[in-house]
Amino acid sequence: MSLFEMYRAGGPIFMNIISLLAIGAIVITVIKIISLVKNQNISLKLLDLILMAGSLALAVGLLSQIVGITQALAAIREAADVSPQIIMGGAIVSFYAPIWGFIVFIFSMLSYFILKETIKARK
Image (tube, rainbow, N blue to C red):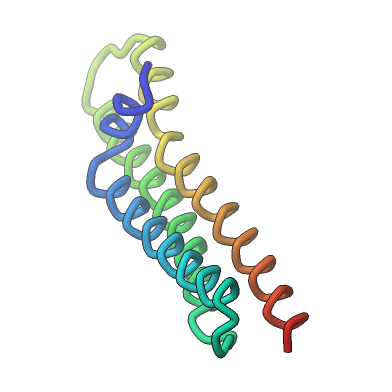
């Protein structure tokens, strides 16, 4: 399964929200890195947004998994006979959004702490 197929299977609404949060964290990280390189007035402002974007991405990923599993369990309850392969396929798909959320969270945490310590060292 390709990355694009996983993205689509993970639920476009939740995956898009996680991706937008990732883009926000990346943009703020790049802005701070450019400020550091140009030796401009460097502040800790906006750094918390990087951390918040990553935390929200993780929360949205976990929320999407809970919503997906709840919907799947409701469908299983209504169906008379469901094969284990279908259940396991759905369970695997339910992990795509949390995995993407964790990736964004790890990136934002690393960016936040590296930038924070670099800015503190320069002051």
